[in-house]
Length: 426
Image 1 (cartoon, rainbow, N blue to C red):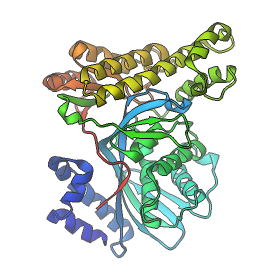
Image 2 (cartoon, rainbow, N blue to C red):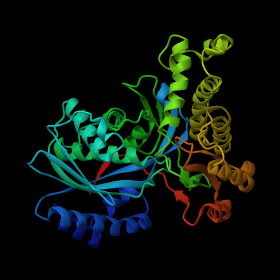
Image 3 (tube, rainbow, N blue to C red):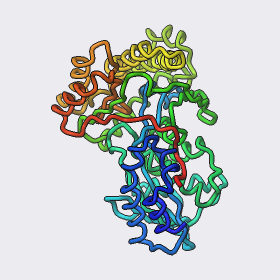
Image 4 (cartoon, one colour):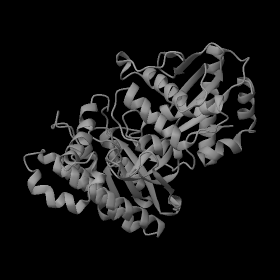
């Protein structure tokens, strides 16, 4: 379809069912319509209305349990949310990939020049180049394309705006050049590769996998080549709770060293015991070795290792609680996860600036409002950004009001769980 034909389908309501498959509610569909029309008009302005286009979407994700476990081959529980990145894209025959994201300069990549470039580290152009390189390396087709994107995944929120962007690019190339046959796991690995090798950020696979696969999922990364992925059968809408992500302010952009240190310190313990990652060492063997590890690795590395092992068990408990419909037990496990992240993994504030502790403040206020009735913990990579809370619906307005009185209007986001990951829309 031509861009203007998509606009007509949206305006007439002909696209409602397809939009509802992604955004769930009628209200959400109506909210999305003007956003989609603005993006399509931007494509027309930049690239014209004479080519067939596709529209793709990739969601942000919420990490429900399994904080900083994926990079050491651990277990996680995650879910895709209704905030997403959207692309309108068409093929071109120039061998040039042009990606214009809302509010950013055009990224331009020649598909014949797909080697990592350290001068591009930290730039979105590197992500574009990396995704193209990996998809080609996997034996799939790539080619030139013209693309505009927009995202409402909050940057620095722990909802993984970068992963959504990478998964969006991978999904777009899949549908434009490969009939949509590239699997969700392959796209997630492609996104991680682009971020590690081309963007220069040593992230794990959780963010990309949750965005690419979609819905409530538990992922066991014991084998990173073949992670075990299972959908969790739980209808959150019937829990009597809302999922809130509270943006306390601050950016993740200067915290790469903090994130890298979590992984490096966990792996330093594994290395001292003759392994690459902690998952390769039994918990009992680790505990027996702790006295001999003192002085060989840092104390914080040992604390983070303890967190890793116990967090893996918590993921299993949280999944079991959801599958058994025991939401009170689920909340208890999530609160345990939050305490462990604060005390042992120590990713609630950066040691570079210990006087700034907005996440700690948000957790304190959450405890004051929710007590034992809700659950709350650091969200995502931590150190800055957001917390996550499961709030009883009868306390939702009070919780939202108190959070926004401190962190500003619009800082408390009430989200829904999205049923699909990276996908073609319409």
